[in-house]
Amino acid sequence: MSSPSSSGKELAPPAAETLVQVATGDRTSVLGRTRIGLLVVGGVVLLFVVDSTWDAGFIYAAVGAAIVAVALDEYARLVRRTGTDVSRPLLVVCGVALFLVQWAGWAWPNLFPDPWVSGSVFLGLILMGMLTGRVLRAQIEGATQSVAVAMAGLLYIPVLLGFLTAIRIEWGMAGLVTVVTVCKIGSSGAYFAGKSLGRAKLAPAVSPNKTVAGAVGAVVASVAAACALSFSPWAVMSARTALLYGVAAAIVAMLGDLAASLLKRQADLKDSARMLPGVGGMLDIVDDVLFLAPVSYLFFRCFCV
Image (cartoon, rainbow, N blue to C red; front, side, top):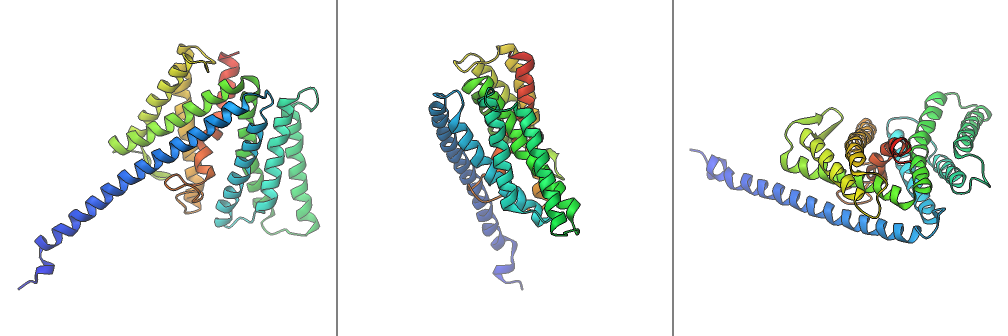
């Protein structure tokens, strides 16, 4: 005779309780993510308003340098988990300096060299310095991998973010608001559409949580945000151009998100850090912006001159 604890009827209530806990956890995660998102957006908007009083974007430069520093530190942690030896302090210092060199070139073209030239020269000097340091210390083991991964990190974060600097200087706060708003509203659209309607996986090997429904939601939300901005005081493009930009921005931002997921998957991590509950680290926050910045600069050059 089976005991009550082993019968199917007795096991049903705990299973039901588990489903309730999972559903409650999902609601809590969604609400927490929304709350954090609103706080971040509010803080960014406040910074934008204050920063708009200076053409050079001093607050933008300070915030950008901080983002580069934290994101590069997280990047170094990720690659070190894969067995590649990278100096986190050196990478952070070089990355922040590279970002500020580019910013100075855009902000004061009469005082500093062309940002593309100065950035390329500075990047070349960093490469030379890293290789020279290895030579002087006779560190042969893993030299190629270490230097290559470090340089990839500098290209990935400060160089790509430097295109956002170009947008900030050439198109002012309106350009910056357009890129960040379209990107983040598209990301929110992907998150909520994926949670509500997601079934088919978009790239299960790289990011199991990404769904086709989420991708569609990202496109719809990005297009809506871009078109809404085209009728606002922040407009930098027509509604027809905004429609094209919204589609392109959604696709590129999703690729940026998946690229960061690729790095985290190799390091066997879900998030780049535990900075914000339900969101992750700085790299989790800016991964889509990093890919969108150069594409946006090219798009603005072609359609928003």
